[in-house]
Each structure stands twice: as C-alpha cells, then as structure tokens.
Image (tube, rainbow, N blue to C red; front, side, top):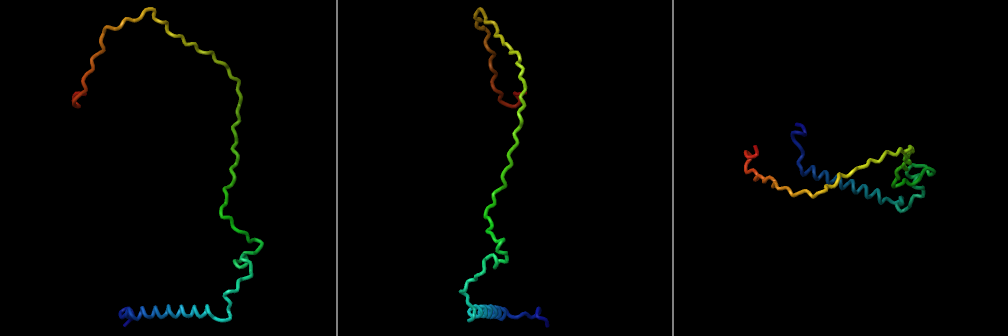
Length: 122
C-alpha cells in the first residue's frame, strides 16, 4: 500500500511539527549564546563599506527631488499698427411729437382662459 492510501494520523504529524520547530529554536538559541563571539562589539567599518558602496560615492539620498525649473515662457511680440480713425456714426433721435398722443379708446383683447385638457390645445 502507498502512503496516499494510508496517511499518518493527525496527532503524529502535529507532534512531529512541534518537535522540529522546538529543535530549530533551541539550535538557534545555542548558536546565538556561544562563547567566543562578542555580540556587543560594534563594527568599525563605515556604513558605506558595509553596504558595498565605496566611501567616495557614499552620499545620503535626497528624500525629495524638486521638479526641474520651468522654462520662461516666450512673450508674444506686439506689432504696432497705425490706427485709422473711422468716422463716428451719428445717431439721430426721432423728432418729438408736437402733440401728446390721445389715449387709445380700444381696449386690449381679453385673455383666453387656460386650457383644461390636451384636446383644448388643438
């Protein structure tokens, strides 16, 4: 029979994972606490050399790069032309009536009542 037909019980799989993770933690802890290695000693190499960048090229990167300056806009050239004076138009007022107009005796037409249905419109 293959392992696919007969899998391991869940309790064995979980206990194996816990055992492996516990052993990995213990090995990492013992390697970190080994005598002979000083964890408190600071590196004396410049940070640029530690990162692999030569010291002469090491410079802090700017956080903000300003946009490039705008080019000055070219102003349009004004061409002066000789202005020709056009004759001024004279507007004449209508002659004033010599007599006052008599009031009109005709009454304004009576307004029709608003339509009450659509058929009244046609």
